[in-house]
Image (cartoon, rainbow, N blue to C red; front, side):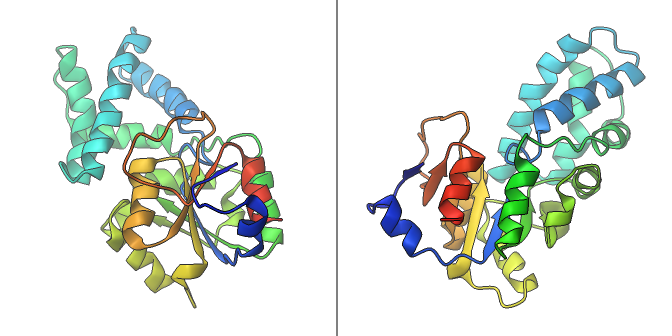
Length: 244
């Protein structure tokens, strides 16, 4: 594990006093890539598409771009949800109702609750150590609720805070302010945000004045302006930090 703070591992661990853990879901605990791949396959087959991989190759980067635009406030959540599939089919010369397609896709993706190997064991260990665990996710309520219900990690969470329900999203400080209002005896200084996204999870924690842990299993270089308190390359790193 690599620490941004100029202290040794022993010194830093000896002063930890976290109680509340805010976990991002997708790409941190939930395997979104697998979920998306399966859901898209079923959805596109349902739409009569035969060149499924060709459609995926266009949709996946386009969808990621729309989520980046949403993080940056360039588009609204309804714009993202109701236009991404109409844009997909329009690219291939087919006119379809984006809002209708969104509901059909939602039925497929909401059933995909795949998690990464070791995720449930991580949360089990943290729960046994009396941490209060919460989800903090940018997502669509029906989709995230469904996916968590189909996962093996749902029982470990006290509550899942979903951006669509909150009326705000990461990285806005307001997202965390609303979380603070809903957690009994919440203390900012005892809270750690854990997630894979520098521009959502870490930037949001920076904006809200929270400590943060960048979950970085691909060992990417941080080229952003956002600085995590810690960086973990594996679930074992998180365990070593929080369960000394």
